[in-house]
Figure (cartoon, rainbow, N blue to C red):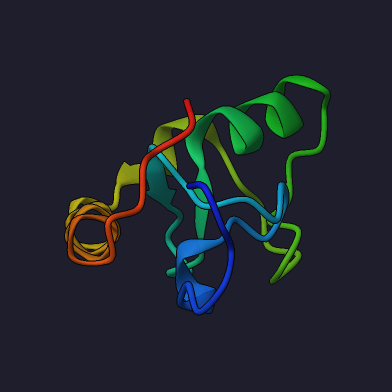
Length: 83
């Protein structure tokens, strides 16, 4: 996104601190940018950084609801995505 002004906090990945483009959610309901959490797992960090519970790539599911919210908000606020 072009600017972080007034963007809802839930749109930001807790790892990258950037607006998510491909949000995925773990079993605990914590959402991350897919590439960021997969990188963390590939580096051997096999726990959720928020809850400290075990985390596996197979337990991540797309957070389609949040993605739609992000896309809708961006469109309503004339925000361009930076990919």
